[in-house]
Length: 165
Image (cartoon, rainbow, N blue to C red; front, top):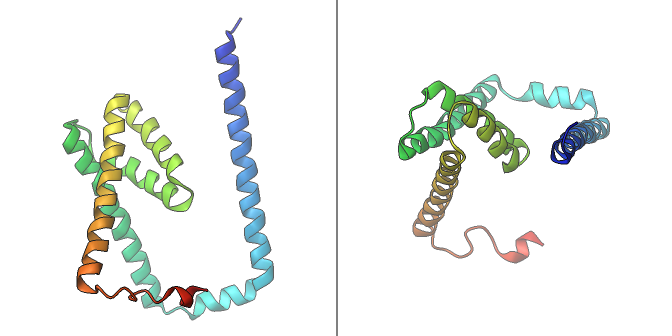
């Protein structure tokens, strides 16, 4: 006979899986409603009106963005001094970023935890990798923000508050 903790864990797994499916279904329904309002033909025309060069550039820049984002994790592994194949690190980071950029940060951390723990990292090492990632990201935000304020110190750079009302 299984203990109570194991039974509760099984129930929670089933509930979370069911909730994930429900949320996915809701997302599909919302997208379908939006497509109905705009019209599939209008979407097709708008997409076809985008120059091929612009689409190619967008794809290239998206690839480059994900590539450079994955280097945060590579640097984090150097920081924690743990050896792991670079392709594994970049694979886990890519999946994490794909979910975090689409949904939220929570799945990103869960994906990293699951993969990194399977590849031999301890919970403390995974936490250090995730902390390094967050710290690096926010340092980058502050560096870009500070640079903008140095280059363009005008307080109305983004427009006045009344422009947004």
